[in-house]
Length: 178
Image 1 (cartoon, one colour):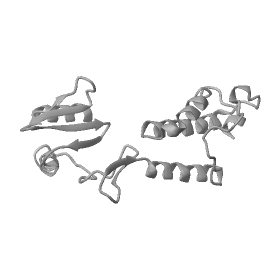
Image 2 (cartoon, rainbow, N blue to C red):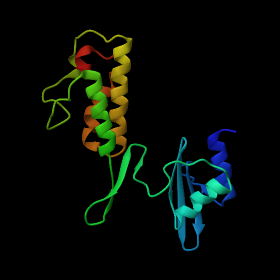
Image 3 (tube, one colour):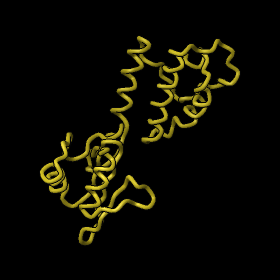
Image 4 (spheres, rainbow, N blue to C red):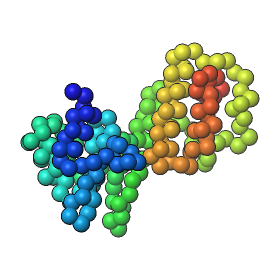
């Protein structure tokens, strides 16, 4: 049985129902509150009164092998932290650090610092450099995917630049990769 189907059967058995807005968000009423489980591939995140009892039940009764059980600190590229005054926040620092490490491994140097993700007077649509080969196209597409995920997890300040460069995924040129 596929993992997603097994989790769905388990959550239904535990009294959860999928949200009408997103079938990977499961919910159930528990007294005066609602409890939620978010599923993504083989990842789970939950919000509930007693999360330890829930994970213990998954392990002991349903025989799941779970890793990373406990308060959420990192999930799907996002950091979950509290600032010094105790306010809970979600950030992308760890994911971006991993992107920088990947960039340095690939290009042998740190990326240039810019005050804005768009270079003033840049016109990528006018780039006439040679088309990239298959290996470089894969590299370009990989970096675009990583940047798109950064936008998704909260770096909206780079959205316009990422969307602009995303237009060239099918046939990127050397100047765009540079």
